[in-house]
Amino acid sequence: MINNYKKVDASRISISELMQPSHSNFDGKIHGGYILNLMDQIAFACASKHSETYCVTASVDTVDFLNPIEIGELVTMKASVNYVGKTSMVVGIRVEAENIRTGHIKHCNSSYFTMVAKDDLGKSISVPGLILNDKSEVKRFLKAIKRKETKVHREHEFNSASFSLENYIEELEGYRIKIDLPENR
Image (spheres, one colour):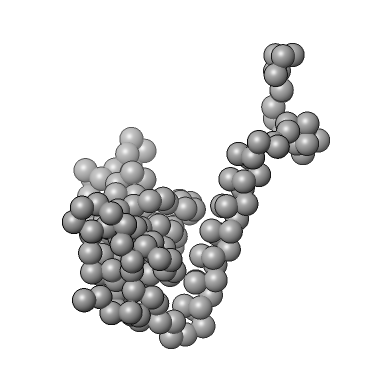
């Protein structure tokens, strides 16, 4: 039986992996797709640990590659559940790379994966609530709420039947675009 609430620490996960030449792109840096694959794996593990069931990735938010990762660096990913809904969880992931010869550590990426808990039939199921133990955990929860609200607002604004291109023409001035639409639109 799933507990009603769990501490963030109960599902916090950290993994480390040495970056090899087989993980690199044509520029000799570690391929972003490889890093995303590792991030998806740790998000799955963290969410599954919290929910005590199988989880799937519903969305990925804010994937900014801040610093390149070099061959031979030790990459460490830290994941924690930052937010829970009824059946979903937002897993925050921080990616750092360490030069193992110098000890220099750089922040390479922070991302947020929305994971959904599933039962054996593939139906979404409820997840335990979250016990927030410190100010940073409360801030992460609040930031997740704000990201969710912003996404809902953006989807409503641009998918609404009342969307009118004329309302945005002035806003597009100054961008490197030319708008060349057929007259009948």
